[in-house]
Length: 128
Image (cartoon, rainbow, N blue to C red):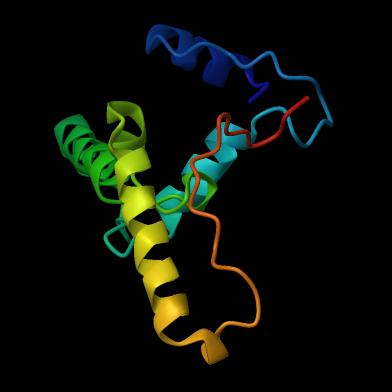
């Protein structure tokens, strides 16, 4: 990333340099988490994209999947769209009801209380 030719090429493409601190492992946790999710998708390409359009198409499909289908553990296994639209609270309340009914119907199967399905007020990857 320090080569002048690479830096010049990135500027030509409109890519801004990151000004994260050197040798600090947690400056970019959001992008690192997203890249991991990218790379572990079953449809992640095994070969380079043949065109910018193909890459944009794949990323667009990924973003749609990520926001509307991928359930995140940090927000109680709802999608980002459900969280931002307000539907997550209703979904989680329904889950809590199902768990409570199951616990009441079969109390011997439950050694503790049911899982907490309450939506967190804030969600952090790396709170400072």
